[in-house]
Image (cartoon, rainbow, N blue to C red; front, side, top):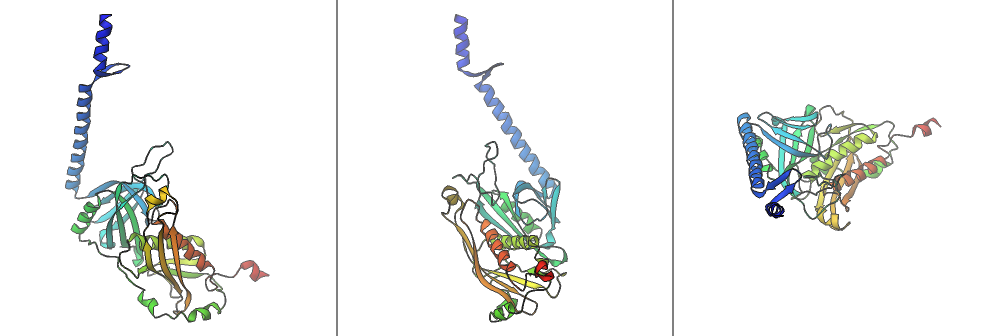
Amino acid sequence: MRSLKRSNSRSSSGLTFGFGTFGIRSVSVFALFILTLTFARVATAQSSEALSGALEIHHVVHVLGFGDLKPERKGNLVIDGNRLTFTQGKSHAEVPLHAIRAFFIGHDNVALIGGAKGAVAGMAPYGAGQAITMIRPGVDTFTLLYMGEDHAVHGAVLLLPKGKGDKVTGVLVKAGVSSRDYPQTGLAASSQALSTGALKLVKDSGEAQVRRSVQVALPTESVDGIPPQFPIGLYEDLIAKLSKSGRFEKVWRQGDSRADSDVLTLHVDILQVKKGSARLRGLVPFAGPTVIKAHVRLTDASNRVLLDKDMNGAERLRGENIVATKHLSKKIAKELAKLPGVKPPNVKETMG
């Protein structure tokens, strides 16, 4: 009986498991061991980073821009003295540092999402829009503008773990790449002198007989203070949607030297961005909407106007703020499909 009491006394000072008693002191020693191991790993990573001269960041979310890589998926970002590389599984995108025209680091927050088994993801991409909670950890938004092959303009948006943006800035500046403002403001010079009076004449000129090619200009801004991920996100999504639509022979990027001379040109000038609250929309749908307003103009090689219209896109549900650009690009694609000067004649009607 006494031995039973002594056993109960010992178990009250520790945690009893199937294979014996694990004391509080043992727990403390084990925790200290884990903490020491963690610090050792961090120190090793930092020392290897210093020796190699490269910056490596894990758990980076690809929002958009690197065409062959999956959006809204994590990967690893490495920046050395010559190139920026983003790796996602067996695929990767590579940008030479000399091709970077501008980069921007912004501070934002991101929604937590629940996985299939109820696990909470550490970082969630823009557009996830699921199970948004009041807890929204900070992230750094890395927006990149660079020149691809044939001088075509490309953009990309990545989400970095909080605090990593300053490291990216330091490495890029040290390599001679400077952070600067978004490169264009106001209407594109080539579109300022266009007359909207030509719009009716173009519409009366009859339908296009063949599919035309279109070149998407980098969106411009008529106001200051617009986060660069909005125009770059709109630019990349427009190219993706117009390419997928099949209504154009070719969809060219701005600056692409391969574009033919008879190309149509799409200008989008951003007039306003009302940045709402994704957190509020997650709790109350339609509350705190994000709205982007823009002027859309399509011209042909003779500077005749085929489309001249104010349009807007909005995210009113659980999506992140940048999703508003996707809604706007979808509307623009639908509007272009209606134009007689763009839409080729129906083959069945022609045969009849």
